[in-house]
Image (cartoon, rainbow, N blue to C red; front, side, top):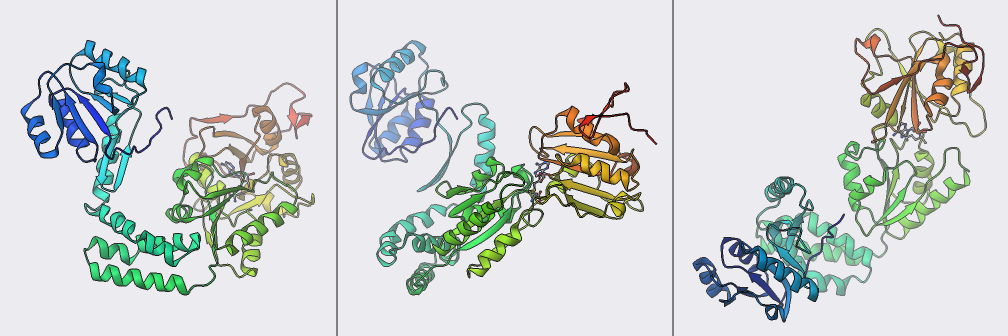
Length: 485
Ligand SMILES: C[S@@+](CC[C@H](N)C(=O)[O-])C[C@H]1O[C@@H](n2cnc3c(N)ncnc32)[C@H](O)[C@@H]1O
C-alpha cells in the first residue's frame, strides 16, 4: 500500500484551487460538500464557478498563482492547463509541506483523490493507487446501488444518541452490543423508513433491555475457514468474523482471511505445529472460555472444517461446560477443496462408491486403520497430515494387497498461490514426496484418477517419473526397484 487512506478534517480550514475552467469546477463542486474555506485563484474564471462561488461563499481571485497564495492553506488542488505554473505550484506546496493534488498529474501530486460514495456522514472512499480507475468506478457503482440514498441518516441519528447510550451503559462491551442491535435491526429499518416514533420506541426498548442485563456472557463460534483461498469462506463465516471481538487463530488459517474481521478485534495466535504437545489444546480451551466469560464474541478460526481433524469437539465441550453458547460454522475441508482444484472427482458412479478421509498423524504412533479394507480394489481415500507417514501408508497398503500401481495424487497448499499437484503410483509415493520436495500441508488422494472419470489430467499436474536405474528411492530411502503390475 503506497497511498494510505485517511479522512482529513477540513472544517473552517482553507483549501486553494488553482484554475478557473471545467477541471477546477469539478473539484470545487466536490469541496463545497465540506465546510472548508474555499479560494479559487486563476487569471480567468468561468461563469459556472462564479455563480457557484456566489451561492457557497467561495473567495475568487483573478490573478496568476504566486507562492504567497499558500499562506494559510492546508490543501491545494491544481486544476489548470499550464504545465510551467503547475511545476511552480508543486514546488512551492512541497516546500511548505502542504498536501497537493495536480489534476491528471499523479507524478507531481502528494495525494490522489479516491472515487467517493457520499452518504454523509457515511463516506466510502475507493482507491486503486491510480492503477485502474475503471475498477474503482465499478466498485463505486455497486456500493451506490447497495446503500440507500438516506443511509447517512442512520449514522447521523446514531450520533445524536451516542451520549445517552454512554450515560446509561458504562460497560464498553454492552455499548457495542446495543449499537450492533440498533444499527443492524429494527431501529435502523425505522430510521430508513423515516418512522421517527417507531425508531424512538425501539431505541428505548433496546436501552431498557441492555440496562437490565447485569452480566453479559459472550459466545464462541468455531469457524471452518476453508483451505486457504478467502473466496472459499462461507457467508456465515464472514458474518461471524465481522462480529467477533476476539479472534483465536490456528496455524493453517490464511492471514488474508483476517481481513474480513474488524480491525479492532483482538487477535490471539493459537498456532499449533502438527502433532504438537497436547497441553497447548488445554490452553486454547481456556482462552476461549476466559474471553467468552468476559462477554466477548470469540471467533475460533480453524483451517478447513472445524470438525475434521480440527479438535473442535474438545473445544466445543470445554466452552459448553463453562455455560457459554457455542456455534459451529462448517468450512470447506482440504480434501474437497484440493480435489476440486485439480478437477478430481471423489466418487464415481459404479466405480468409486465410497470415499474416506484418514489421518496420517498419530501422537502415540498407533495407526489402527483397517489396511486390508483400504487396500481393496475400488477404495478411495484422502490422507490428511500424511506427508511424514507416507512410507508407512505405502508399506502397510502394499502388504495388505493393494496394487502397487494404484493411483495417488498429492496436492500441496491446495487453493493457494503456491499450490502444487503431483501424480504417482502407490508404490512410488514416498519417492515422489521426497523427489518433488513436498513439505505440506498436503492431501494425498489414493485410488482416484481422472482417467477412470473420463477426464484429462490438469496441465498444472507434475507427474512423478521414477528413475529406471537401480537404487530408486523407496519409502524415503534408497531401495531396490518396485515391480510394477
Ligand atoms: C490438522 S489438519 C486440519 C484439517 C482441516 N480441519 C480441514 O478440514 O481441512 C491439517 C491437515 O489438513 C490438510 N490441509 C490443510 N490445508 C491444506 C491445504 N491448503 N492444502 C492441502 N492440504 C491441506 C493437510 O493434510 C494438513 O496436514
